Structures are given as structure tokens and as C-alpha cells.
Figure 1: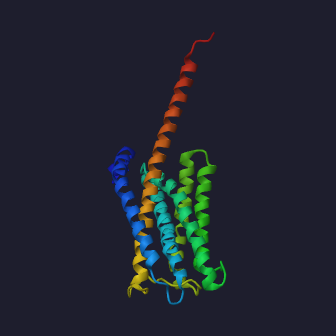
Figure 2: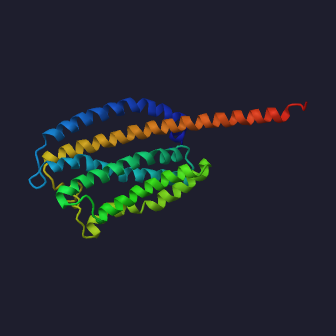
Figure 3: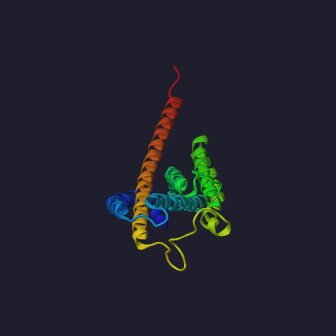
Length: 249
């Protein structure tokens, strides 16, 4: 895997993959939105169930994104992969967006279903903690000027905070909560009708492709930004050396 961690090689691979991935994202979103529009209302939730076509993929991506950040942080701390630090840093703002979208759409669904926009439910509270973890990672990157120190600090926080991801996943099983239990990924099979399941899976695939498009593009931009910074520092260093070596008047 070390050869694929080379930034130059990564840039070439990303340039080749991104057009296909972007096309797949557009096709999946068009298909998913069409299937969502024609999906029948749920016998209990009515048309409110369609909020789930946005909420559920957002929640899945919020957890998946943090998992990628934690895995990248391990690679950054232990194996010092050149792209691991870039991957972790660029995934944070995307994770913030998906987590915020999951919280907002969950609140919009909760009002008609539970009679309130928010309850201190185990699942909701743990997702809110995830949102604050994302904000903490962003704050670390902004607060520490030295990129290497910022990367190490953010990596440690990301790895420690990963304990929250299984809590989110299994909170509905470990505690008595208002949030409905898992209904798609179950040992006995999905517990929802195919008329709802198929649009949900298509939208989940669309959101997943969107994440990878955004992540790959953000990684490319970060690599270019770091190269520009390195060139500027080199120019400053050369100018300082020239000035130091100039004869006194």
C-alpha cells in the first residue's frame, strides 16, 4: 500500500476516478430522488417517512466518515503514511456537514412522531457528542499553527473519540430509547417494505458516492495547498540565505 500513499500517484489515480465517481453520484441521486418521490406513505408515519431517505444516509455517513478519520489517524501516528494526515484533515468538514444534516432531519422527523424536536435519547445524545467531536477536531487544526503538531493532536482525539461510534450504533440495543431499532441491517433481514427499502438504499449509495467525490477532491486541494506552502517557505528560506550572504554596505 506504500506506493499508493505517494501523493503524486494519488493525484493521478484521483483524476482518473473522479469523473466516473461523479457520474455515478449524479445518476444515483436522480434515481434516488425519483424513487423517493413515488414511494408510498408509511402506514404509521405517512409521508413523514420520506425524511428518512435523507436522515438515514446522513447518519450512516457521519459514522463512516469518523471511522475513516480514525483509521487515517492510526496510519498517520503509527505508519506515517504521507496521505493519512491529509485524509483525516479533509474528512472532518465533510463529517461535520453530514452529522449536522442527520441531527436536523432527525429533529424534523421527531416533531410529528414524538411530539418534540429533541429528547435526550441515547442515540440522539451520542450523535450530538459526535458532532462536538468533529468541531473539536476542526478547532485543533485551526488553533495549532504547526501542522505536524496539529495533526498529532487531532489524530489522538480522533482515535480516543472513536469509542463513540459503536455507542451510536448499539445505543438502541443497550438502552431503552425512543429511537427505533435497526431495521435495515439485521440478522433476520430488513424489517421494512421494499417500496421504502429500495429508495433508501439507492439514496445511501448516492450519499456514499458524494462523500468520496468530496473527500477525494478535498484531498487533492489539500495536497496542492501544502505544495504551495512548501514552495513559499523554500523561497523565503532562499531569500533569507541570500540576504545573510550579501556584503555589508
